[in-house]
Image 1 (cartoon, helix red, strand yellow):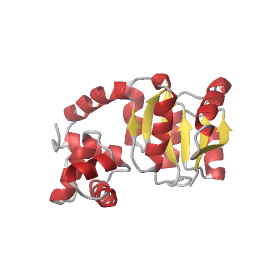
Image 2 (cartoon, one colour):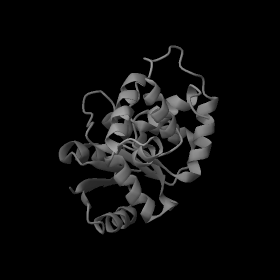
Image 3 (cartoon, one colour):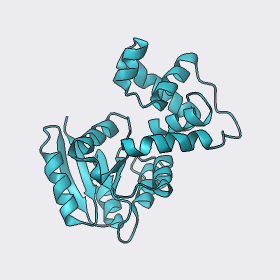
Image 4 (tube, one colour):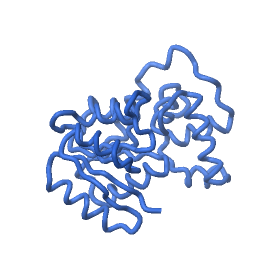
Length: 216
C-alpha cells in the first residue's frame, strides 16, 4: 500500500526538497502541500492523508495548534492522519506540547532524508520517531515530571513489560524479538496499554512509563 503524505511548511524550497525525498520511495507519495497552518488543516481535512508533515512556526496558524486540532478529539479532528512535526526548533516548549497533544513524531530538519523517511513509516505503523538529539533530554524531563494524581487502570504484567520497552525506544519488531512473541501481539498490548493509561499514541505510553517509574 502507498502512504499518502501532505507537507506543510512556509518555505517552498523545504517543501520541494521533502517531496523529492519522499516521492523517490516506492511506498510513499506526496499528495498535497500547504504554505501555512490554516491551509494545512484544510488540506488534511480534504485529502485525509496518512501522514501530515508540519513545521512549528507557520503563518496564520502554528504547527502546534495544527497538531491539537487534527490529533485531538474535538470537531474537525482527523484521527486517521498521523501528524509528524518537522522543524528547526529543538526547544522543550515545542517538543512537549507536540507529543502531549498527539504528534506521531518530532523530527529536526537537520536530521537528514533517511530519518525523514523513517519517521513517516514509523507514524504509519503506529510508532513515533523523535530525533535522537532530543530523546535523552526528553526522557530526563519525563522522569522529573510528577506522577499522575490518580492511578490509571492497572496494566497486566505483559502490558507493563511492553510499555517499559516502548519507553526505552524499542520498535514493535524489537519488542517482539526481546519477549519472543509476535509483532501483532506486541501491537495489541501497546494498544491496550495506550487505552488504559489514556495515551493518544505510543509516545504517550512511553511518557506514562517514565513518569510512573516503570522504566529508568
